[in-house]
Length: 406
Ligand SMILES: Cc1ncc(COP(=O)(O)O)c(C=O)c1O
Image 1 (spheres, helix red, strand yellow):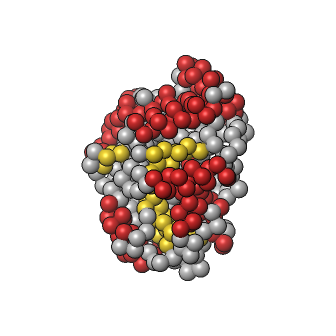
Image 2: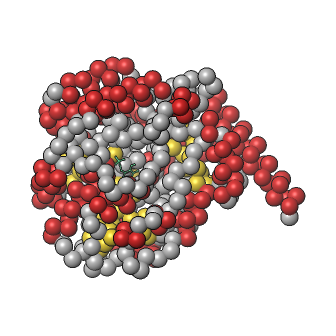
Image 3: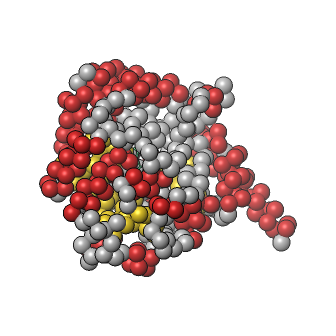
């Protein structure tokens, strides 16, 4: 079987699989251990675990809405994971998608200022791909309207800004542990907050709306599949397995809400001890790739503090959609991949959006040109060289054809 690199991933060890088994029985105890491990690891004062990040986000929004029933809008970046939109819709709220600054994952400041109003329930500030995005200015703006900011660090657990971990820099943070995240339990999400009252509400919401627990066996089967198939010599087999897709996202507000299965919580607890090592190693690979792209007509995207970026995948902008398609088609076996193919405003659900939803040209341009390069520990130095050579060939081909056409 030909060598194929996953776009993202965290290797699961054989002993990890065994560590999940007691979680099948001691669900509650392992869930508590995970919540304590998050708190004691400096990842949030109070931690509340769920079966997924999107359930966590739903719990946050539903809990915030208790005190502000007339605030029906949630602000989120116009280019992000469709699950964010699904959680907003499921909470019965409206999404106000705000455009990004040009060629960046930061909110466009003027658009954000215009979007904030008395009907805004919360701002979701996302730090994608492990990027060290500084949301202080977002918090400052939102504070002027007494609106809370949720720091969505689903893809960025382990990244720090000014020495503080993302997820803990605002009143409310969110982590996800689904596949393709910095560390994984195959599924799972954790809400963190330093607001005691809000924590009580979120916990109460869980008791009422996510009290069921299940999926422990499935989590072990999934972890076993990751253990077997993440290796580049076997990853190509995934093509033949129905229903297994890394990094793809669909909009589905009908997602299951539940407590986290103990087996998944157990895997996350083990992986937390490797978090800093894994994220530092990814940063090194990402930085090496980023440096190698400087001569090419490609734009790697960084956070506000590039030295602190912990690239879960390295996000790169091609000059146009054609270039991007050529790259992801020709270098798919080297882990080059599209992310979300479209901006949130392309979702066909009119009840999702506020009535006066603006167009978001920067987010749409990003969606058309963005691809990512893999940074996980199975990407070798030789792979990196092959990736850069491939990108160089593909982009010089397009440069030549552009020249000959013009
Ligand atoms: C930015 C962002 N927020 C929220 C989520 C939701 O997490 P989960 O997949 O655990 O529901 C994801 C994950 O896909 C994400 O990337």
